[in-house]
Image (cartoon, rainbow, N blue to C red; front, side, top):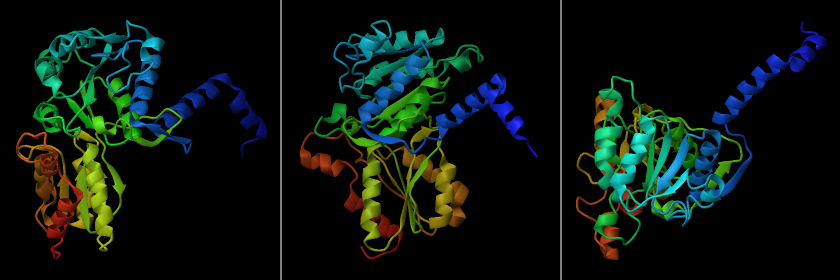
Length: 362
């Protein structure tokens, strides 16, 4: 039996109290409390960067218009005033140049966050991302790492024409040495961006221009979300629907429509593209026996291609129907609104696809 004196001794002993406090704080970082508030997607990203820059003075932000203009999408609003021009750095319109500076800084002990106005512009910096950031750890025999985050708007955002509308998850996920994250809501955006900034590998962080103004619940307390873990956002029993980024709206909308016809869809947000949590998908397919994937990629060598390969290899005996997918059209996205609508996945076509997998009447 523990005496009251022993209990009192535990709480007043400074060493034991310190250890308890550290352990308790570490638990809070990964298990959010119920103290939630509603904030914008851009605010969640800003909070993640602010918190990590206060925590570690090696972290800094650079990119076009991130400082004086408060960010092209106002993600970095107020950060220049708090951290100053040495840690929030405006760059020229020269993606290859400022990415090279950031990669060099990362290799020398700093932790840069590089913001691109859009990932369509980051193709100019691909040489640094592919040939230096992703390969340096291997080429140096593990001696030189590159802890850096490349982040910005990805995919289509309405009528912006073909050169501003490409989704790049599958391209970067094909590069060994990179981790690729693609988020769909403020909660995941903050938790995963904080984890990305602390990670010792280069991380590609995909957002969406059309989501910056969306709202979601985020804890008041600090928290982290592990990289490489998918999330079941809606449980179901009849079919598994997997998606990520803004196509999660299509996946969840499809599940709502199917529920009206008594079809129970389980919806999984992949969140991290590489490393891919295909085990969570497989466990869901073991239950539902059917899989549909919704993504904004072009169809050839896409994220859905990798998921399909993995699930048929590891879970073929659990499938009661072929795996199906809906992607963007295999073409550049044009400006005309009717062509934009035809180009992207939508709820009606996804519902139709699920019904085919369920062998229901169309």
